[in-house]
Amino acid sequence: MTARTTTSPRGNHQAKWAVPAALIALSLIPVIAGAARLSELTGGAPTPQNARFFGSPIPVITHIVTVTVYSLLGAFQFIPSLRRGKRSWHRMAGRILVPAGLLAALSGVWMSMFYDLPEGDGEALLVLRLIFGSAMVASIILGLFAIRRRDYATHGAWMTRAYAIALGAGTQALVILSWILVAGPTNETTRAILMGASWVINLAVAEYVIRRRARMAGHASSTAGRAVKPETTTAGHPSVP
Image (cartoon, rainbow, N blue to C red):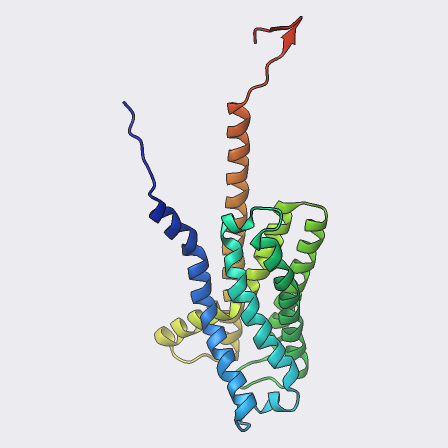
């Protein structure tokens, strides 16, 4: 007699929300920092840390608002049940997320190019921001091209990469804090290395998710193919395989 394992509805519900809950928790770090920055811009006086934003506040406000929408709303795109149906949550949310993601990435690139570098940043970090910001824009555009071809797997892969880049700020805060606790304050070089490594970590996790999703889809297809084996007939009678 073989043992039969069952999964409770409560367990399925908790597993379904584990990933978006973790992504939202990671997003809260830059979201809270962005909210504090907005408060400074709308009701505070310039300081050495934020003076560069007061002369041209529109790009930074755009960046904060769109990153907040993209990171929080985007977390729910990783719930499989919300991706089903012709007029699903996934499709409707995507119409908000695509422009939000593009504006977040483009405003981030603009700020990197035209705002003065803050203290502690250097040219190496500037180049990294331009590279990963451009990569986020390219990923979203490639995801759009893929969905127009109805290539859902490729679409999901590129959108997952774009989201991983967008969450870089959350991972960077954790990585830099860990470094400070262990090794002390950062300088320009270590800050650039740690922030670049954080983007790489996020993209590595994204690639793992993409490949795992592809393996699961392939396994499901092969299982379905074995379960339904077509019969060939001769003169109305099934042939012997």
